[in-house]
Image (cartoon, rainbow, N blue to C red; front, side, top):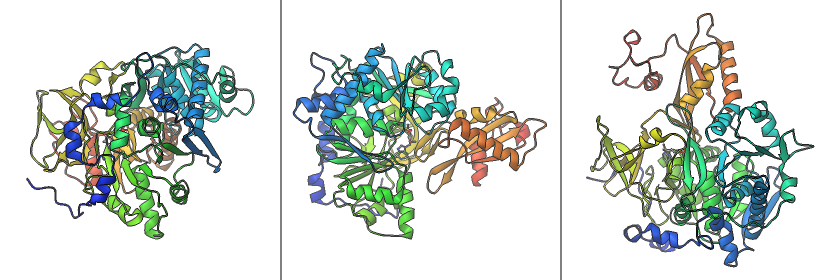
Length: 590
Ligand code: AMP
């Protein structure tokens, strides 16, 4: 079998580039890799146990690195706040002390709903220190996704801002029985009743705290993700995950102590936690956090002024930068930049090679998902880059392309460029330990010794993986995973809607955009006014990040004989693609 042929030539790495990389030789590193050895690089807690925040902060302080800069935060208004490792640890300790004074116990759930504010970082690390479970929510979520995730995960504490609380939570706060404490950042005056102002509470809390003696298998993080059907799923991650966060930061992102590193992902999603908080800190780098939203000029300025060495971003952002460049191809000034990586959705080969044109180096695509907790497949600094490929499995990771049989068994397809489901051999430390309270859905992810990812992919003869698409109906828009069922449920709340189906349509910048199809109840008139009303309803309930951008009316929606709406058929029709196997379509719909 030949390697894949694409019009995009392989970007070769020079011997100099290979020699400089953390991981210099892929084959050698892969053959001798052992997770136990990676684990031995971390300190562990004095007296036993493992805690992510200890590895991220205290380990460096104990080794004399407390004065190194851990976090440089740039506010929307360009105000800068800096925290050394010792200062960040003190802030995390204050948060942990506060939790403890509130009676929050080990294993209880602390949710954040914050923009990229310094308090988010204090809360994440302080929660872990206290032995509680940290669950970040995306601040652009509307009330419905927030509430659903807080109910499913039985939130005990919510850390948010006064503004977000008033807009999105206050109306139903009393209806989540597990929620005992609401901590509000940025309170202008007295906090609303039943809430506590965060900054004064932190100022009054002790900056020393003895990290809770967590065990490697204790739950540390709960990250929500979506499937095709049902409610969002809470993927459970444990403290042991830090072993993978640490080592993959070094191999896949080429992080080195003292680097200045910018991860543009929001900590409301898994990348922003694993690689926006934990991995950079365990690797001793300075984390740059920009509070503001994407802006081409601002990003140009951050890369230059902050002297970013390693930059981890996402395809949608790269495509927006490319678009701006096509109108105004001014060179980027980023002399400190050494490594650029991208994750979250397919990275077009154009974007990889544009990196070479604009920055003198390619973007390195890598692949992982909420469930895997850390990067699994990557283009490494020492590795030739095939534009359009996600790269090769990291040392310690075994990936395959598999085929499911109707009887549920799974078989590896060992033929180059054959398409199948991307699967991984379980066993790496950051693998999810379950979906909270969803044992059956968790078990369905495994067969014959494989973890099935839900992605379709191919592997070429040199072991590079190529993303083909999702095996299910979930949507990726600007890197955010959207479950169609969650969107459909909100549309169904509207008095006019009898049925709803939601699909993702290709978009040159966002990857996919959400489009909804609805059938109306008798007595309702399809038209522009209702369309706008529905779009407004969805936006208000779901938030702009996951609400549909477009709605079309249909008399009926195509369904299987068992009554399942055939989203794939709607999509095929919308895109003018072959309709595929219609044997299960309900007859009147044909
Ligand atoms: P999430 O759980 O939100 O991180 O989303 C994970 C999903 O994003 C994967 O299952 C893929 O469908 C998609 N994804 C992540 N990284 C890549 C990549 N490099 N190329 C293509 N799709 C990706």
